[in-house]
Amino acid sequence: MQRDLDERIDTAVANLAGIRSTAKGVRKWLTGAFLEMPTLRPLKNFLNGTWLEHPLHPVLTDVPIGAWTTAMVLDIATAVFGARNLGKASGIAIGIGVLGASGSIATGMMDFTDTDEPEDSMIFTHALVNAAATLLFTTSYVLRQRNNWRTEPSHVALSLLGYAAVTFGGFLGGSLVYRRGVMVNRNAYRATPKDFTPAIALAELPEDKPTLVEVQGEPILFVRRGERVYAVGAVCSHYGGPLEKGKLNGTTVECPWHYSVFSIRDGRYLRGPTTSPLPLYETRVHDGQVHVKLQQRQN
Ligand code: FES
Image 1 (cartoon, rainbow, N blue to C red):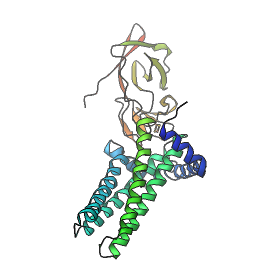
Image 2: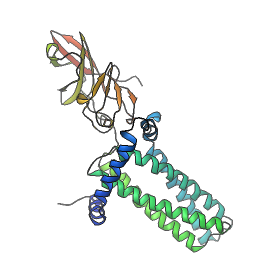
Image 3: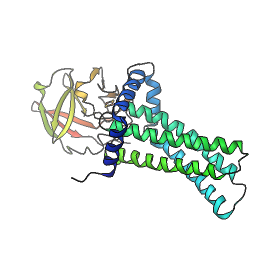
Image 4: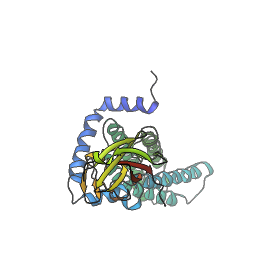
């Protein structure tokens, strides 16, 4: 059977260098340090992008790619057209890229903490390749600065190698998101039930206990409080954690996997690492049956 290019690359790299076990070990260490220690969780959630309501990592990765592309264009202009005095501009662009890459590495590490097998080894490879690119550009920057921003062929060679590495790293990152769905909203395509649909008898819903019911194929989490029934998506928008196994606390539910907290009143998240809310459903009780329908958000 034909396999995707990214899968073949992933298998080759992982098997060759023992990446799989190293990735697992590093992920375990990061989990212990940032996820299981409540004091460091706010920092982790900040780096995940919870405050931005958007993952922070893909925002920052554009900085090194753009800055290093600029540096490459300036180096090419210097070499091909004999343009003078562009060495400092190129150096500044490389420096900005290195700063952006540092932020990308920090945010990427926090996203990596929340992933699982088999994607973790590919993410680790993606991280190693981009770290190598950052090291090459950093070396190029230091050498250029020491040379009073006069560009030498060796500086350009280092940048070229770095650019090749970051291109490959970007390819792996794109594959992870677009082909494997890592770090995407797990509820992006929930669209039903559009009209009120019977879900479960009210008498069958236990009081104050998150209960999973599938309605038209959609996993919905019901919480009953007397005659009042709350309904939100049962799949954590962050990485697909089963919210029916989560901790109910008043009108919030905590995901058992990475501890995102959602309101069961409106599906919004109150704590990350998620950056997306849950689908929200309207409920009504008719003839002892709980009926449910997807509620469109106002914003
Ligand atoms: S799956 Fe990560 S917080 Fe729920």
